[in-house]
Image 1 (cartoon, rainbow over the protein chains, first blue to last red):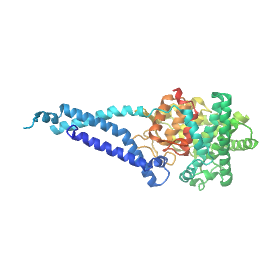
Image 2 (cartoon, chains in turn orange, green):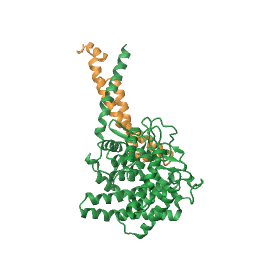
Image 3 (tube, chains in turn cyan, orange):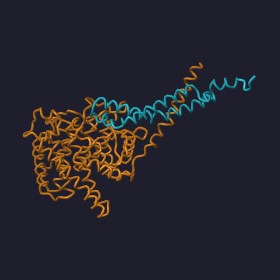
Image 4 (tube, each protein chain N blue to C red):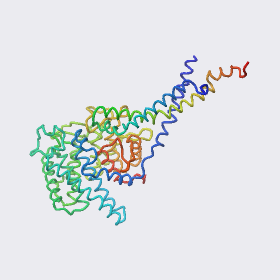
Length: 97
Length: 385
């Protein structure tokens, strides 16, 4: 399985997963309610920070995660078609002994 | 060479990934079409005499304690009036029976607060300290909004001699102060006139002409004529947002004031208002990847400074939540359907809608924002676009 995905693509998948986990976490913590604090400029600094983290995590999940997944898929495909890994894998013997 | 090739491949994949994804995001956030349902859900939250979270909001800005109620009351009045022409008579009557007591409760609450604490209850702290140029001190912010709200209530049903009297007294005070001002404008704060407040006052004067045949000394038309000469920004042609009583400009055009002012001026001079809308659309309105927003200041504006009205503009884009909210109302009022749809889509993305037992609300909004959205929804329906 690990050979199916390029190293760069794995990095992208880890980054995408981290962003999703961060978003789910701030969502579960109920920090969505603090979005108004940040945007309206009212409330405590702590609430504004929570609002900023929620908005950042949400926008990152919406804007970045699908694009990272697409890039990972494209990179894996391109590596297998044109990359050195394909050349190396061709050179390897397919039969033991 | 191999490293360069790998870097090139990785970069290309990232660029292609983003290029494929970003134009598709809009598909996840279709503009809401269930307008009336949205409005009905918001009634429960907004039409309380003390909207949710208002005491906290008042600590940040006492003006919002008046604005949230005035704008919510205006939205209720507009819906009753709109229902009379768009719904069967029985349905319109039922809606009126439901909404009118809520409108009355809002009117009574603001009048009582003003009676108990004085007009300065609704002003920022410096409204108590500075030297008012016009005597006796009054705030056009409070007078204009209250006159407009009571006037709209009377347009729905003119059945209260007490409200009639209160409206006429306030209109008289507005006319007297504007007539004797070198800029045909009254102070909202000591030696501070705001276009926002004065255009709401003008809308109230137009209501007075309509309801009572009041003599407003031609102030609405005279104000627009003066504004064309002295209260527009030279570079953009947009109305400035605040000025001294003698006409010296304090703040240039600001989205959080301008969109509402333009919407109010529809009642006074439709051609001027439409011209201002077109300019605001050009200098403040933006659409990126199908998502609309409005800037607080025109690009390259000097003296742009963040304040409690502008809120926190979003970095890089310069998008202002308050300017964008008022822009949605203006876009619908001026029948700019594509911009209204783009703004509504942004609301779905960045407003963080929450469905609760009490209805749907936006986590990123507050009582003032909710009232502005309700007013926007009271204009021409999005589903026609």
